[in-house]
Image 1 (cartoon, rainbow, N blue to C red):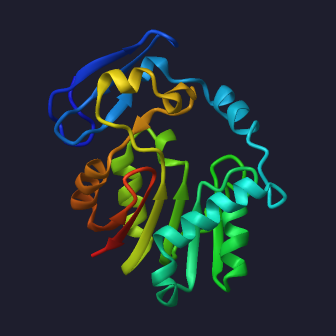
Image 2: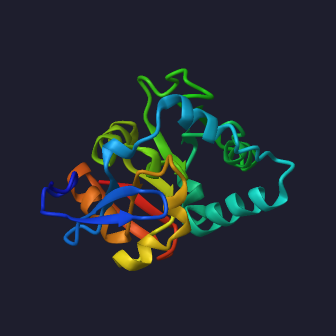
Length: 213
């Protein structure tokens, strides 16, 4: 087995709690789940339908407000058109973006499946708590690159692992059966180099901002 991102050898991590296998690349710090342990599309949708967060959920709204402030607020003057990629059943972030005066499209493979992004390029694409569900991150980065204007921005949120196998075995975030990919800031550096981005900043915990070059 080799890494999906950098093709270097990987080591395996056995999650005895859930009886799942993961693969860990020490080179690019990417961790990914064995495909044999993926859930079905039906079970994936059931899991997503448990996310009943709306604009009436103060904690959820606050999380996105902090994400906006921490990642791209200082660049907001450069942003007019936004794609929220993977909006989920309650597109709270898109409402906050609209309230900031931005023109926002939303896409979600289950809840907003119309491909509104076709033929368009955006100043910003946001994708929050999404990339950990995607089997091939390199492919989605190529997609992002094809729909972001030169010098435009990509803002991502996903929990970063510690790069320690024993920590990973005890980590709550990997227990969601639909989470199949896990990242570090360095992993995003590798993805950025392969897809025409550069990393502008990250918080070392869960959010990162990249720029199309």
